[in-house]
Length: 308
Image (cartoon, rainbow, N blue to C red; front, side):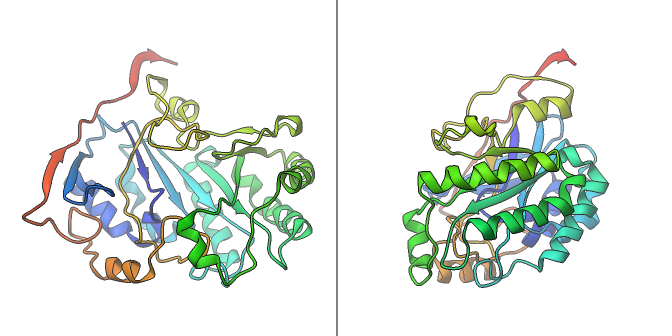
């Protein structure tokens, strides 16, 4: 099985002590985001976990205890965007993030640090030229430390509309996407950087930009040294190419407070959840209640016996 850590929140940035405590105890609980009384128990036995996939904008708090992950295979989806704190309110300064990116890559290898430049949107100030300038600058500084950049374009989820209603943030038209990518791809080529899209229906193959799998069976097979038998994740969007995984995060818990975030859609709930976090609890947020039903999640390895 593969664990996604996490599309729903930034565990490396804000909940690293909790996660490492879970690794030491060998299990964690995940509350079902729809049926709140249903809680899954996840066995963290390294023999059963094929790979850990981390999603983060700032793994700096996570790095000091990474020796606890020595028995696991893992890689990072590391988001580094060109936006300031009017949009990404609590994300550290870019210089600090870049230093962390380099530190992480030097420690675990650049093939295990995927740069995410997403979501892409326009405002009254942020236009094509803005993205081209900052994409080039970021690429120049971090491409010695990564092999791939994954991009996506803002989707105006209903969950985001409230946070964005007083801004000029908007989605790109199809023409604008083509025009931007036509100019971004040569920059990626200049730095020998693979560029692919995340969960996008639009076909950019004429610019040699393909579709990415963020939970990537090809990369995981290289890490584990054998082939996997895993299906597409049916819980993700049709356009998503990820193979199946279990997400161990919780919505409305990320303290970055980025305006465009689909995983934070209730500020009051975020504050309440953050206050209810206990690093020693098996649950990311809160404690087990008498009304909860705990179900042990079936964990099976996707690995075959065919070694590379």
